[in-house]
Length: 227
Image (cartoon, rainbow, N blue to C red; front, side, top):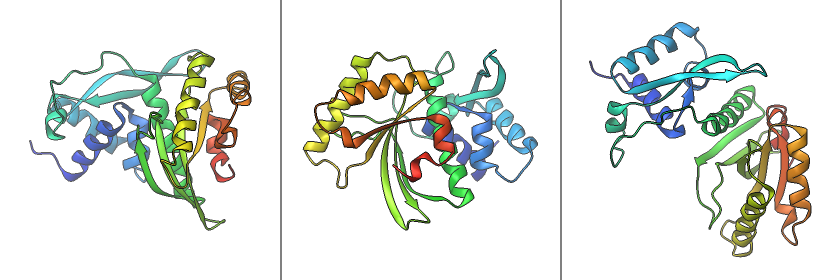
């Protein structure tokens, strides 16, 4: 069975983010339909080994089962021209899914008319820094554009790791590797982690103005519009 243009679009977006929940695929590529078309498409792509389904994403404080999670299958790996041997992930990558959450929130905000996504790139190096997501946004009401290097933080990294990440950004800033240099935004899960990262940023000897920290929920509420 040949893959349709829509099928290939699904394979490409899953390959881009490493792993996506079915809810991500539905929002990004099937925004104006019921759940049936996306479910049928994903099931067909799994049968064709273009995608591989690896379980459900846990949701809520009790860890209930949420949307199914997908990654490239062996055929999808080949279709996208990936190099090396196909080695699927054996478990759900919660960090990759959180990065996808952030991007989906931005797409949702764009559809609502507040922003325009001018460019988005995953893991684009800035010197020795490697943000999870780099975006350039047009802010509709302000008629301006702003760039962000987004660090998706799940609260597991020690403060010294955050400090080292900041040092890499500061070095890149001093070397003028981006003009203008993007705002570096740490997105965190809760207020406790926000305070911890804020303390790290407050101890920086230089370059403090480049960094900010906010909650994932604040992104959806328009946090990016006013850095």
